[in-house]
Amino acid sequence: MKLWIGCIFMLSAILGGAANVSKTLSQEEKPLVIILMGPPGAGKGTQAKPLSDELEIPHISTGDLFRKQIREQTPLGKTAKIYIDAGKYVPDELVFDMLFTRLSEPDCKKGYILDGFPRNITQARILDKKLDARIKVIYLHVPDSALIERITGRLSCKSCGKTYHTKNNPPKKSLTCDSCSSSLYQREDDKETVLKKRLEEYHTQTSPLLSYYKEKGVLSEVDATNSQETVLHLVLETLQVPARSV
Ligand code: ADP
Ligand code: ADP
Ligand code: ZN
Image (cartoon, rainbow, N blue to C red; front, side, top):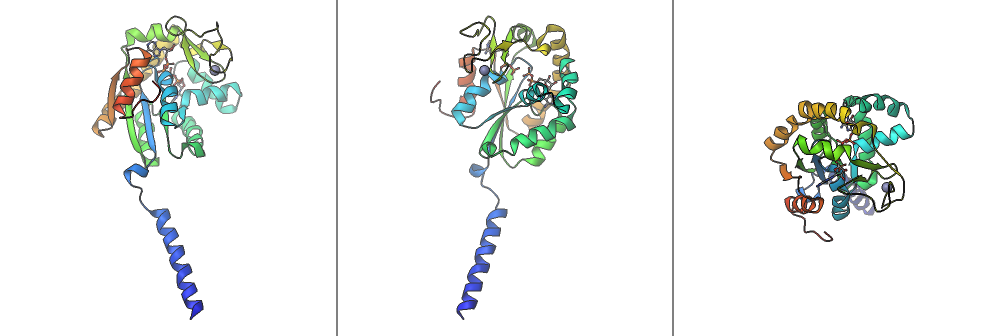
């Protein structure tokens, strides 16, 4: 008799466990995925850093992931560099593995901020298929005319990826990152000729995503011509997050 009761107890524990695994998550239990969209220079990286601190979720930039591969001179980095330096998007199949490996790391469990992905409809559809998450898309709107000055004056940190601007947002010490003291440099693809190609890529491939996410009811637009601080306030307001430290 005791053995039977034991067996029934074990069976129900196993079934209970299995039920837990396949349980559908409530809206609040799902990871929060924030997609920062906008043309090169809109301020995605600039906003992602304080947002990541506020929300305590990591900032995942596909551009930064590629630049790491390039620094490490991996086969992926060597191929990606050819596209990036020409101002073209890297082919989708080279993006997916790199990104989804990063997203499978434990710090992404609660959610993350995506900067630079998705960049076309195929990427957006793959993301939709892979994710069971609360998705919020923030479109940082800046007209092309303001982007040239932002991009050609951008300085980027070699180690942590933080960006500065020669005039609008200079580092405290010349060509040195305030956060990690590494040296700052101008990205090869931030030269004006390459930027023109990147803007073309953005308008043909990425802009259509705005209506894709609008139709899903997850898109919010922020006027990102405002100061960095104002843009951050607007983004937090949109996300309905009370600002702690801004
Ligand atoms: P993205 O990641 O969208 O390409 P960044 O965040 O790197 O853009 O910003 C591009 C450049 O513009 C950087 O030099 C940055 O310091 C500057 N910048 C970012 N936000 C603003 C802003 N609100 N006003 C003026 N300059 C900005
Ligand atoms: P920015 O912030 O200035 O828009 P990123 O750092 O996000 O630039 O990206 C730099 C380059 O890396 C892009 O111009 C593109 O060549 C490549 N890249 C980054 N993300 C993707 C992506 N999701 N799909 C294809 N190419 C990408
Ligand atoms: Zn740094």
